[in-house]
Image 1: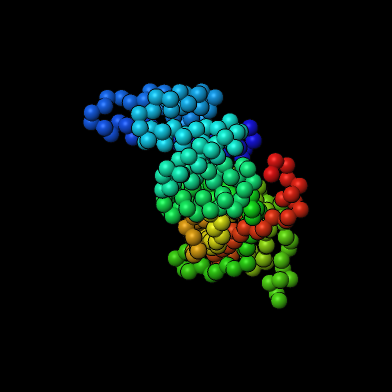
Image 2: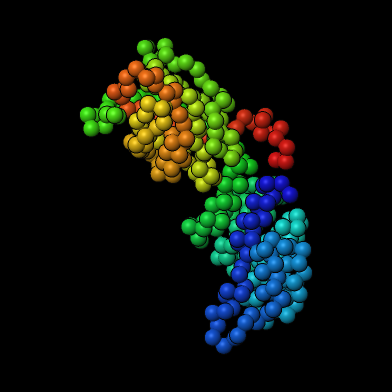
Length: 175
Length: 132
């Protein structure tokens, strides 16, 4: 796996919906309500899409409500991209955004999907929309960095200039 | 201009870099600094600054002891705090030629300015890069 893809994978894992965390807020449910979605999310967050995607698909079959479905599809978007199946991933991201156009994590993931597909303008639009929804997201900043490296690569240049010295004040004189 | 006469060389890659990704470094030496640099360390371009396309400048001033080691290193001014830490680190890791026994310590405080810039990559070079 090249460095760029690895970074991409890390970004995706950071953008995966933490199913376990959101369900644990409930006072009436002890433990996750959909164990497959929960295990799938954990596997994806560990970067293990080979296990994470099948578990999430299984979890989707028993999804109780729209919220669980949304989480499942959002995670599948990330999972399929990790597997290198960008077109399949795109379908899942679109599903989520059709249902919830304010889901910044999915804009984040779809921006990466578009990047992978070479659809740069759409990627930029998703990054912009995601940042409007969550301006402080470090994940989106990372994705924007990847996007900028694609469209406007730069090289670092550090100039070291020793020309301007200043006289020592009396107290600063070395011994 | 007197200063320009004494610009000894522009090093492109021959400056020791603490950077993981090697920065393209140009170095300017001036004779006003009576202490001759022996080992110059370039700072690392902060990753987040590069990611967010932030450029900046830091001026660090310091004393140089008889052995050529920087002492009392301090930031004189900077355009962005992100660049201060790597600049201080680079100065502290640099050395100057030690003074001989009877040589007086110059009554001057050395200052070094680090200019962090990001320049558009050559289009052809970018195209030729594998995996992009």
